[in-house]
Image (tube, rainbow, N blue to C red; front, side, top):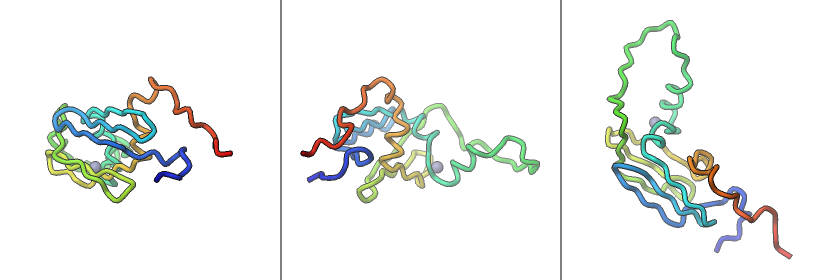
Length: 126
Ligand SMILES: [Zn+2]
């Protein structure tokens, strides 16, 4: 089924959500990624989270931004596939606009450094 070049086309073969702890993805190239929920939440790719992360501390406007009840332990309600390219996570605090596309998930894989690169480097089709 998969005839795509392997470089950016890794897709999850299996996804497991432990709602209080972590999201585990078994990729179709054999890698396994475990994302602690706190970590995932703090890497939420939605526009408003991004903006909050990028915003410098002192903007001059002193908006009363309350931390959204940011406990150390993020909890997820569901993770569902969005088309064939991404995963949407609904958090227990109601936040549901984070769409984590697979490439992004591969990029932020917290264990990526521990694992050898997938051996498929170049095209091996003869
Ligand atoms: Zn977000």
